[in-house]
Amino acid sequence: MLKIISKTGNDKIATVYVAQTKESKYLEFVESVQPPLSREDKWVLIVSTLFGCPVGCPMCDAGGSFHGKLSKGEILAQIDHLVAARFPDKNIACKKFKIQFARMGEPALNPAVLEVLEELPERYKCSSLLPSFSTVAPEGCESFFNKLIDIKNRLYASGGFQMQFSIHTTDQKLREELIPIKKWDFARIADYGARFYASGDKKITLNFALAKNSPVCAKELKKYFDPEIFIIKITPVNPTVNSAANNIESYFTDGSVGEDTNNLLKQLQEAGYEVLLSIGELEENQIGSNCGQFIRKLEKNGAFVSG
View 1 (tube, rainbow, N blue to C red):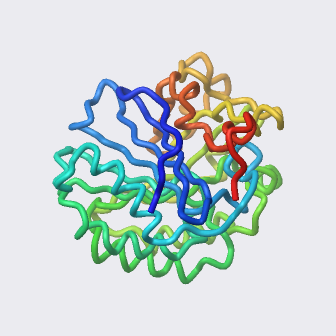
View 2: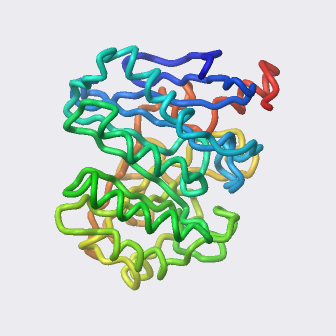
């Protein structure tokens, strides 16, 4: 179903695959580890759900074009390819096997993602399977999100699912610029989170790909998001083509205390939130495993033209 046309990376950190479908559309997916942890400790797969993305966030390279939704089979084929290379019997001997629906595309715009989630526990033999879902909460996807609650409760209860909302700033005008699509406001995200979360679940993550001059107000977050239900994750703005073109600079680069000139981490912690600062390996920027869309670089270099 998928023809691998490009593979690049470091097996000890991350590898990016670009694949072509039988309709001559292109997608990418990633496998990674998290040094110093071994693959047996934690293995992360990051798969695409759309061909490109219609959202068009100004720091993400996946939004340059949009060519439709992946089928259930095309999503599973990405996972199958990576699993077959490491664990051909599909018996995945990892302490944590994480599948992130977070490469190309907003996953809530593709109902096939729900079909994949229904099948994963039967398809792969792994007691530590952890699907991870990252969304900007597009307007009009209420049915999708309601079904997701049911799937989580049936198949991934008691900590077997990671739900994440990407919000990036508490400044609502700037949030409209960073996520230029009709989407839920904070009150609706908080209401959904309260319905989604059950005792024993992983807390719901609020993602901030934090740029300089992107305000994050702990008091504003506290108005909506209960620290007993939500945690905060802060990541750098990765050096993508679009972030450079739009002059979006990262607040954090190496994660050192000295970079936090606004004492943001302390303010969030004092508000009662658990805060995760996730920087990653700097080599990933050269590999292209965390910078939006490797396909964009290949297209720019004239390697191919996406369908």
